[in-house]
Structure formats: C-alpha cells, structure tokens
Image (cartoon, rainbow, N blue to C red; front, side):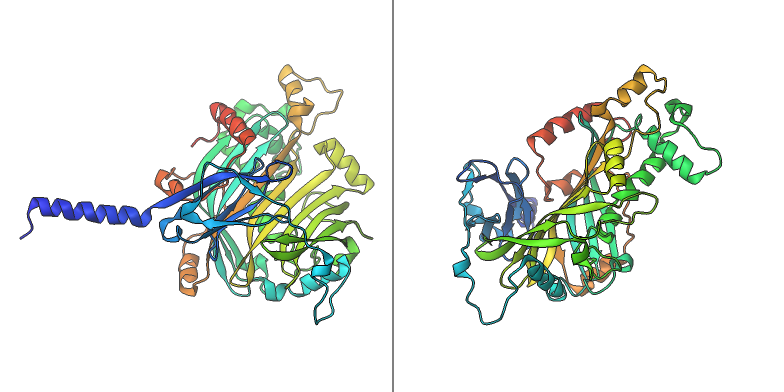
Length: 475
C-alpha cells in the first residue's frame, strides 16, 4: 500500500525526470574576425550531424538552445574563409568571444584530380546547376523555422512580426507552385504603426478593385476607415511583392525554382548573368569556390503581376563547394539598370537596389536544405501627391524624405528538418494558413524552447521604441 509520502516522492521523481527530458542548454556568444576584430555576420553555429543551428547577427552575436540529449555532441562554428571552431556543446564557454582565423586555399592544393573540371566561373556555375537534382532534396520534407518580418523607414520601425513557421516541400523535381505549403504556427510579436501610412495602401487597393471612380489620398480620412479595411489593404500591398508565398514560390528562390519557365537560374541563365571565378576559400575544412555574379546581355525581370518589376542587372556572389558542386550560399542583388527602372526606383524608393537576397544552405544527409534566408526590398507606400499640392502639416511630415521611403526585411531561420514519411503526411492533414496577420494567443512556454534569430543592438533599440507606440496589433 502506497502512503502519502511515497506518493509525493513518486510525483517529485516523475516531475524531475520530465523536467530533465525537456531541459536544454543555452549557448550564446559573439563570433569575431581574429585579424580585424570585427564581428562576423552570418557565421553558422550548429550541432554536428543535426539540423539544430542558428546564424550570427550583424553584431556577430548568437543564441542557440540545445536539448540536453545533444549536450555531449560537437558544436561547430564556421564562416566561409575562416578556420572552423569545434567544441563539445556542454563545454562551450558563454563568457569568451569566439575568434576565427582566416583560412584561404591555394590553387596548388586543389588542381590535381582525375576528372576534367571547368576552369571558368560560367563553367563552374553551369556544372553546379546541372547537379541540383543530386544536391537538392529529391523527396518531400518539412522544415520548422522562425520568421522575423519587419518594415521600417529611415527613422523607425513601422511593423514587426515574429512567427514560428512550418514549410512543406515536395522536393526539387516537383513544381513549388503546386506542392509547396507554409503555415504560421505561433506568433511571438505583432506590432504595427502603419495605421496612418497605410492610407496610401488603402487608396492603391481601392483603385485596383474599383477602376471606375479613382480615389486620391486627400479624399481619405483615417477616422473614416475601420481597422479591418486597413488590414485588408495592407495584406494586399504586402503580398504583391514580398509575401511568404512569393518568397518561396517566386523567381528569387533561385535554385529551388530553376526548372520553372523563365527561371532566373534556368536554361537561359547566361543571357542574364555572367559569373567570374574570384578565388577558392575554405568552409568548414572544405574547399569552396567564390564566384562573382555580374551583368550579362539581357536585363533581369521578375514579371510581378501589376507592378513594373523589370529592367535590373544582377550583382553578388555564389559560393560553391569544390568537391561536389553543391551551392552553399547565394548573395544576390537586383539593381535598377534600364532608364525606366532607374527613374522609377529613384522617385518611388530613393534607392537603385530593389531586391537584396541572401540564402544559406546546410548539408544534411548529403542534401542541401535552406538554412537561412534574408530578403530586403523597398516598399511602395507614400505616393499620390504632386510636389505643388497643398498639404497639411501632417501630410508634410509623411513626405519628409526620411519618413517617406520604406523597406521590408524578411529573415527566416530553419532549425529542424523532418523527413519521416508518416510524420510528414500527418502534418499535411492539418489546416495550413500562411497568413502572418493571424491573431494567435501568445504561448510563453513554446517560445522558451524555440530557436530564434537574435536581434542586433540596433534592432533591440528600435523594437523597444516601436512597442511603446504600437497601435494596430499588440503581443
């Protein structure tokens, strides 16, 4: 017969076991260039042979939550062009910065191989694209990740949403337009200061829907619009160019969608891009090509419905592993180049860089999966008044150059890959909703155990300012 004392002891032991099973260690620090002492942004920090990982922010800082079951595994900190740092996870010192030394391969080390190899940047890239069917996932999988979606002008943040997301992908050989899905699982923060500026989105949205009577910005009073009307207009404006669906299903998902018609990295890749071999570096003890992306014969265009999104030249870098031609990292900018796009970009955005993209890939079980995505694009917000139009003081403030020009940044960090067929099928049976505006209750316990991107010091300061003034949405 069990007495009360024994029963209490049993529950205490059970609680401790359960607590220990869910426990984790927190690894946080800063990655620094040993020579320059500058922070290293986008360094990879992960547990070897797993998908548990993160990247360093613009200050070189990172935070990684590691379940206890992996605490004896190897923590790897690597950055292209630097020697790799490795240590057992539980022995990692959170108090000392991580200094990485430069590591450059010489051509003499890598030229002796049995098979003939391409020697030009164009040849290497074509070989890498040819091998995408081998190097990218060829069967369905699910990734769990973290999304930070923020919008700002030159003065302040105007919008911030942080979400846990699930991505389903059927694999490289099947079109993403029909077989790629995204779900917003949890929302951590949702702050919005666009209730004034979104009048312009409302006017654009209304004029698109009602071609008969066209509104002007001066015809609309914020007090006459409901929050629902604003939200509908904001959703429309946000998803035209840089919604989650567009980011993953569109032309800027360069490798995944390279088989699509008119793909940027498709059959006509050299018509719109030229590639120049710069050097050979080292990444996590493997040789890697560094290749410059340059302009070619034709302009680059994204064929965005309802928006002139053409007339660009591409600029950036590709990093391709020497041994298997797998693409590790893409840095890809689209810069206004045609006369029409130069005028449009200057007038509407005050910048010539219209799209700025970074995609990091991680190798897991011999396939390359997206690990980190950064996408930045200017935002069409405050338009509609001519320079000689009479304006109120409030309107003059809106047209202040520092407040007028907006841009949006989306960052995605993936930290879990699920390939088990039964688990994937069970996930697919759930309701999927890609709406990052969906109001969801804040789940504190969930976020305490979920890997997120660490904010930079600038982000922290501006987010604090935003949270004091937010009006449309709140945590």
